[in-house]
Length: 268
Length: 272
Image (tube, rainbow over all chains, first blue to last red; front, side, top):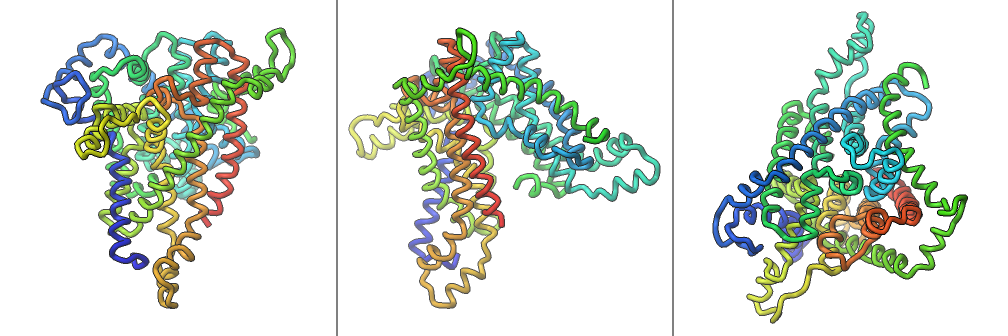
């Protein structure tokens, strides 16, 4: 930058690097801690061991929580993708009156503080006996994933040339065929990204789950309650597995979007 | 609504109305529902009359303000520094800012127990350097909560601010320099004013998100730091006073939506 002298520039670099370190320090600490041989949370760890991973995979309650998390995330993300995908297409390709209101409604769960969604769903679900049920859990997670799907797919559909679809229609293809044979294959990377985002958001969800899940335990819910009660190093192993899982999923999205040259548009 | 769009949008609309809008409306109604039956505003009156509620409200606002200020103090220099980096370093920096964004908030909050605890990284460092004789208490007080929140929220400020800074034309700065302006003047009179809308928009976003924080105060505050969310948790899950919880949620909701409207307004200005 031409606007700063050498001393100022060094100061700025120190501040910038300091900021980055502050951001990533939690991740840099958790991963080595999970391989610690000690029961106490000392850093750096005194020795290497896999005991906390063994403890995690050997604990039936953690395993049960993992299967619940996976099932809820899988079902809710697919539901959000199906309904959200259709709606995103409708919003962009078949404009109607009140379209803005509908879109605002779909994105609202992301804008409204999650704690309010948690209170509202708790009260509403209590009223219709959905509290503590698997169905209620899936419904809540679907609602929370919908905004991500809508945001990713409305952008993608807007960027897809309408004339390509018009050509298909003019050749006699129905709307359904056009979506299935033309739109979907072209937007496959974006659809995949939307699905991964929905899946991760469900898999990480803790606040609403904590309120409405009753006896059902997901991995984040169990983690949260363990963290409040006591500090058990098994959680470092869970945390590391979560980080690895998230990074792999995002890397898959990034590679796919990079290949189709859509990375930058989806990220920013 | 014509028939084509109805077919596409209706399924999702049905789900959202049933599993989101109706519960929300039910909550809004419950806040005005008297236990004896009928309409009442007593739950709102309670908020103003009960010291505990006012205290929690005040500490929520205070923590949110401090976390937002800390975000600006760390985030502005970071975004400014990133603007001046080469393309490769810039991509790496963006990656490092986005990565924690996607990692579970539980994981990030948990890590601070390890970093800030009495035997943690920061305290062993301070002790070794002789800065303090005994460990500084970072955890289970507002300081720890604020640090944890600032960390979680930083990407929300840095990413839009950085994007806005990238849009500033370097030729503007060169023009100021060619007219003889000293570096400091160029920054404060040309560069900084151009980033103010984005900075304000980012700060408002961070502030809104702070108001609803639940996980970080629960874990790093150890029951000693209560924010609105933790109070709501108690009123719903422990004491059961649902009507009261509904009234407090409604206040938080209105507050959030008002600030969000201001944010959208600023964001639009920041993009032009």
